[in-house]
Amino acid sequence: MVTPWFPLLDLNQPNDNSLERSLGEKEQFAELTAKSSTAIGDSDFVFENTPVRVMCNRNCPEIQLVGLKLGPFEEGKEYEIQYWIANELERAGIARFRDEELLDTRKLDKIL
Image (cartoon, rainbow, N blue to C red; front, side, top):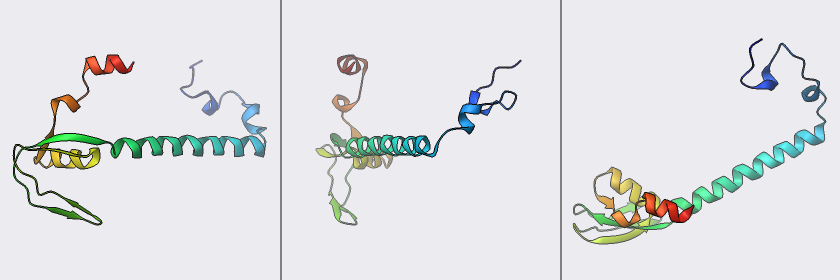
């Protein structure tokens, strides 16, 4: 007999526990899942908005977003901005993360 990848989906063996699961247990599971995803979302939000330092690769005029003005940026200057902004500026070739900001094995070893 082949072992299933996910035992609850094995149709060859009856799974009486899953059929008899009470409504209360299902609600608890849904609540736990919602709390977990909220905690992950909160952590992601904090990470994306953490300030990082970048070096500007080229001149760039002021960028206006809804409720936010960035720049102007001058080539060779260093700026401290939120991670999500720095990531987009790097993708556009306007800025690059400073080497000190990048995670390397030494920094990872300190964290662990």
